[in-house]
Image 1: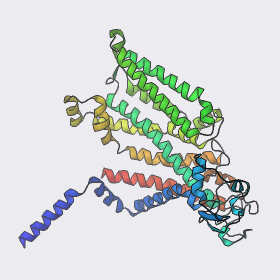
Image 2 (image 1 turned 30 degrees about the vertical axis):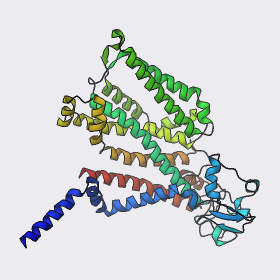
Image 3 (image 1 turned 90 degrees about the vertical axis):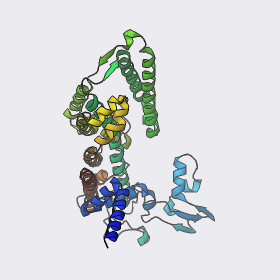
Image 4 (image 1 turned 30 degrees about the horizontal axis):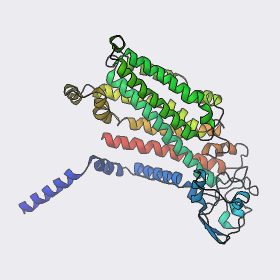
Length: 428
């Protein structure tokens, strides 16, 4: 009997030893029902954002026209990429007016930008001028006859894209600057004079060349690829600056090192960014941009939201840099950058989840505000904020207030609560 209990204890101990940290954290997270349901709602939102074209679209999944088989939704991706072209009959006649031998439509047979002039300001329970119940506007329409349900799905994609992309930019900037400020302080970073001068010169050159002289390319339809090319150009110039500085540092007068008060510089920069209201800065930048694009909104929000991440990382690095394992790494001769990114920074990212959660929620809310004010976002792009804006023109259109407002409330609450509880679980 005693032997059996010992054997069971050994088996239980072996099973516990095989469990990872994340399995324990997930088990604790699952015990919080509200957090678990928030996580599930967040996953549903991600699914809707990714598969939105297959949920709401004015093109069928599969159709047969004049004896030929088509997959219009899939082909649309190839057309946008330049790999395919539509036949003339699909360009001159709307998809809903085509003569089909067979057609399999999405659950919502409308695209967010499609206009239905026969059903303007029609509520979800009102009588609608449609050919069958299959083409009924489930959540009503706006003043132009655009389907609200399709607009809600398009708004989900826009909101999550703004939150994720903007906070990714904020994380990259905030983690880098916060790590430098927290680890080196005001007297730990020493660089040669020529390295400082070359980095400043090539950074200014890259910004002027990439965002100034190439602004026509950024404003010309392919903003994402043009911005990626600009960022790669800036990174390439900075790499070239450091390689050139490494060669010029062999000269004694140029290679003389000076102390860089990086902590003071980063904190003053954070104070400067936080001193001016974010919405006011965005309004100023948007007024200077000729081409309205959601990409510029994401970029501007990311450039303003990094300060909270930087302060959290700085505070953690100020504590971690004095710990024994960091001192041991220095004593063993590890390079400073290796200590920061391999040993110190991974242990400082826990509190960043707090800034990430509220930052993403704030980005979603700020995008809705800008869309509501018709600033920065193209007027033809349907978002939750633009649907709320349409409700001002017709007070009786309650569906234009209830559904987008509920979506903003649920998304902001879900994102904040999910990430916050995840951080508390990790801390426990």
